[in-house]
Figure 1: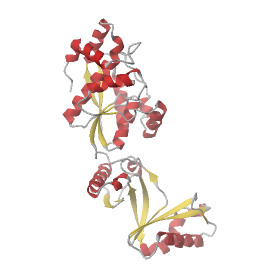
Figure 2: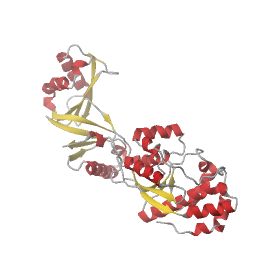
Figure 3: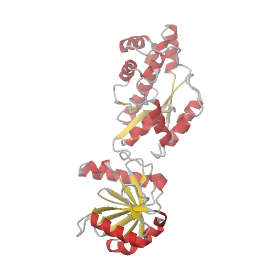
Figure 4: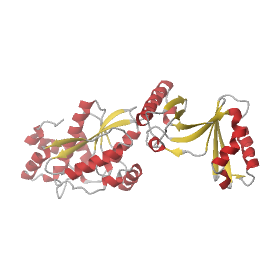
Length: 370
C-alpha cells in the first residue's frame, strides 16, 4: 500500500487534446511552484502527487476542483485490504454507508457489480451497517484504473476555475476596499495572472490607505504566489481638482480621478504586455458607477479591454466572496478615505462635456507616471 494524493480538475477535461495537455502542464507547474519537493504524474482527468503534500496549499490552486488522500494498491488486493481500510477510517462509528465506484479501462466486470461485491464484503465485516446510497454516514470511494486501485473516504473541495496564467495577465486597479480585490480574484479564477496597481493620488490619500491595499494583496498571494502591489504616485488629481473648483465644476472630480486611474493602468498594461485591466466596479453602486458615468470612464482606457466581473453583483454578494477568499477583514480595516470626493458628485455626466473640460485643463497634459 502506498499513500498518494489524487487531484481532480473539471474544465480542462473539456478542451481539445492539445489545449488540455498544455493546461495540464500549467496546472502541474503551478502545483510545483508552491510545493517544489513533490513528485507529480498525470493521466487523463487525474493528477497524482507523492511526497510532502500540503492540503492547505492545494485548496488555493486555481484549476483544482477537489482532491483526496488515497491509498494505492493492486486491483486484486482490494478484497483483503478493504476491511482493514474501513476499520482504520472509522466505519465502525457509522450506521449507514455507501460504496462509490469509478472505473477506467477494460475489465470483465461492471462498476455496479464491484460496488455490490465490496458492499457485501463490508457488511459481512461490520454487520451493524446498512446501505444508504442517498445520504450515508460514511462513503468509501474505490477508483479502479486498469490493474490499479485507489481507495479514499474524503473529498476536499478546492478553489476550482482555470489554471493560473492560461489566459495571460491583467492589470488590476486595487484600492484596498472590498470590491477591487474580489474582482481581481475572480479574474485569477478564470486563468489570469494579476498585476495589482494602486494609483496614489497625492494630497488626497495617506499611507494608511496604501498599507491596507498592500495587506489585501498579501492575502491574494495565497492564490498567486509572488504577487505584489505596484504603487504609482501621481499628482494629476491635485492639479485637476484645483481647476475644477475654480470653474465650479467640482462635481466631476471623481470622474476625472478615475479616468486618470484608467489611463495609468492602461499605460502599465501596455508596458507589461498585459491583455487588459480589471476593476471592481458594480453598476449603480456609487456615483461614478452609473451607466452614464461608466461610458465616460471606459473612453479613457479604450486602448485595452476593461473587465468588470462584479458589474451585476450587489454588495452582499461581493462581501460574501470577500469573506470566503479571506480579503474581507483587511479590506474593512481602518484607513483614511479619499479627501477629494465632492459633496454632490455627478451621476449622469456626458462624455462630450468631460472631453471639452479636459481639453481646457492644463492638468490633462501631465505625462503618465509609468
